Length: 612
Image (tube, rainbow, N blue to C red; front, top):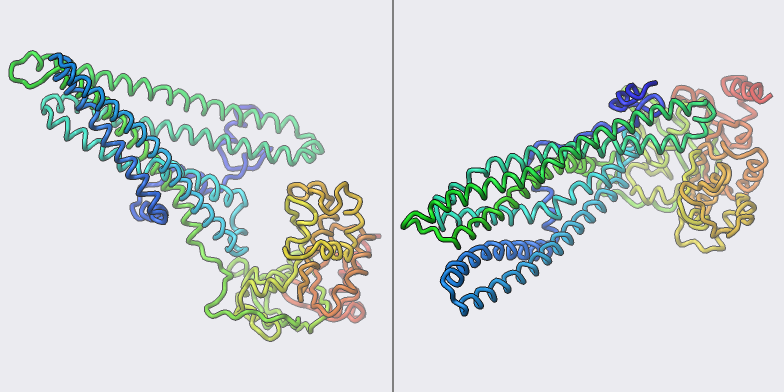
């Protein structure tokens, strides 16, 4: 693969080694058209902190008013105290100027302080609200979106709004006020000079909008290329074992060189455009000053024109101050367009309602005894494709139920519905004769323990991870739970025992050790219903045997559901439900199902042949 080919491939949405890192489609939009209702929705967040907003506005407006007074005082000083020497007037004028500059310094500092505090407070509020809302959403929301896309919304998109809240809202008002004030003052001082000064305004506005827009888009492309390169690096490093196993180092290197080359070329374009802006503003401003003084000198020589040296100096200062708010307003407008894209994505998440939520007047689930019944349950992940098709079964309190079948038969779907991660498309799920959909979600889940095959271990200590489902548990209870599932043996051998840091995703632990911790976490929570979804898939046979011994005591009087590919682990189940294509095709104990020599018998025989 050539570098050019790799660079071209970097333009497409493909996977590493042969394709570029995945970027969620909505995250590519750099800007959106201006929408007033969306902007007003953003402003409402500022209104949550009125005192901060008022202080920031007062400081900014005060600084703007002081800035408008300074050139006028300077012009009058030249005419009244310098051209016509007046020491007393000069001292007075200098004193006034000193007070004005001190006032400008103080108001500017206060404006920066309060606008930044306001902006960061609003951003913190918005990010907290977004994170809290995302945590409340149902599993189907995350099924449709990669984790990276959700992370981009919470971090990058909210950060994009930071410039709007810290600089845009307050400063746009003060910049408009400054512009209007300068124009009024200039026209009140001399109409002819004011009109001459306005000649280059269109050119300055063009620089402040069009060129800034090009620069901003160029840097956004650079950031996007950087994100893709970082994503590729992350996957390449995490998948280095696979890369080396299949001897793909050269292909990976060529692809990375292509992405790196593409990033470098986009970076050069962005820096070249940025290098034009500063000199462009200086040249345009210089042309404006040349025109002002060229015509000003002629008017100065004309009788009865009313133009003085002090007036020209004041005009030059006002003209210099005129470009800053124009440039800032252009920048704010560009930031606003970017904010439209980010806010649209943020509000799209905030407006998403969880598909699984408490119904009006939902009741609190009382302490569960453990009776579970599925009544003609139908469930579809996608419309028209049934994952469960008319499932019926009854589990009495304290029973252990095993679910078996090929991958995709519907076993895990039953578990997800039981924990109310999803709602059934039709039918009912009764727990202690109460419809699970009519009780408060949290009160149900607090009494249901789950151990998944894909165990997630949080960064922190082993003690923290086991205690995760029951924060008020004592250290002794944590140790007892670990001993019950035979996790204490490997924990005690670690350098700090239960206070050992396991690092991100439990990287210090083996897969089997991580699952043992997850098992201990569920046991400590003491649920009335326990779900083991492929919980022993990555545990060796010896450890699995020890866990089974512990479960005989721990699961006594507790309703448990076990999903396992290893059929040897479910021989002692009170009832085995055999799933095929979303339906229960057989049910009974291990002995009865083996005698029937049906589908379950075929699964067991096939597994024994595979293990032989």
